[in-house]
Length: 491
Length: 94
Image (cartoon, rainbow over all chains, first blue to last red; front, side):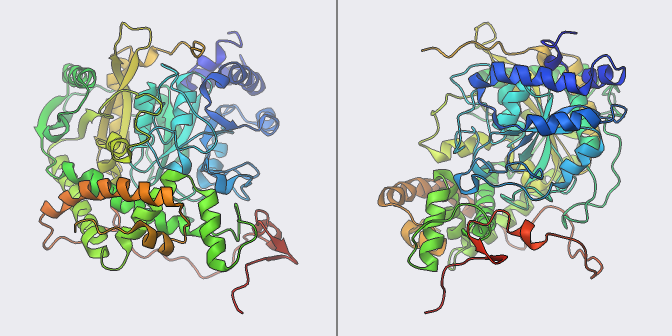
């Protein structure tokens, strides 16, 4: 095993080498650092990394632990004590986390080394990572395209072997969609399964932290580390955590998978449609029974999502007032002026847009028509899933209606960008779990083939079954083995 | 439920200063988004309970006991302006 090959390993392969002492955690980190230096200037996935601190951790980590010595990249909105946590926003430039999130403590408890602060859409608001105030992240399969978002830095890094695995967050698809567009595995846990303590809040009733990895097995291992009750998060569920890797390798006999008829809509890219149809056939060949189901309120999910998520965001972002942390405007004439200018100078366009929309739908005279009505339709969407899961164990759909789009393509039309989340937001509204796994390529013969993701959704707290189905599918294909080749940006 | 959004007024409520260009742009863009959201009017929501979130968790209590948390220096470690172990705020009384 040369240093060059090390970063290409999965977490399962890496921990095996580490446990057998064929490599040391220090050598792993050095090899990773060298590849980051060589590749990341093309990609722009890392906002920062603290190599010295990680090396000190690597020297004392216990390789007998489940993730002993494995560096894990962290989206830049999860607090790691002593490191920056900017949410890719100017308003938090220079912020140093005074404490660590529960997921970070849990990763360290399993021997992992949090390493790197990954680019994202500002405050996780976006589907392309273009809303970062710091830098552009490019899709490693085609550098003229977006990696998806908002966890685009995490996804691109894993796809191009400059991270073994990463943590992201999924509020309306921000783990699953970039995983699909970048050709990797992205998992959104059920609401309450993973603690949000230490995560900078965007939409508190929707946000979940989850893993982005090269394989389903790696995803299950990271979930084994981060899942579980936390008394610091009052929405954290006090339910036992199974071993998510235990069902891997089982076949799909007796498993019923639902195909929601509302998800095969017009506007889905033909390449996506045919890849997903082929994947459904494959699931059938693996023993699953495929049943058509109906989720009648699907068509309303995007509207409900963008009303509720922006309402919650407008409240959560009220804390950025220039007093306790973050940017503060100079030479202000009044308190109002301080607030209004601090926020004008600190927030980017999409964050401002969402604060306005969220404030509007909560304001007197519009609350009932928008916010309250959206909460009621949310309940109907949740009930759609409850009824569907009486008939099937999982649902299957595309993750994204199209493969990765061009940088800049949707930046002037927010509604078009919002529609990129059409298949993912409902799972957040319903609080259920879901995964995106690679299921093919658009333009497979072209030099710049673009990955396609298959979404599998499971009922709340049924993560183990979703891992089982996703793993069976993944292992019956070669899609997850393909890797992008990095070429210089055309002049 | 037709869009009566007045971006300039809402920006005041949100304590957010916008430029004239931003106000105009957001007026158009958010008008499109609200128009799209009008389809929610089609849904019959009579008798449906509003869902604040998707899981059945309500009041969560803990013992009312003191625990260690930030000391002043830690709480102030990211403050843009501070003095004498305190945050400095803008004058609010005349």
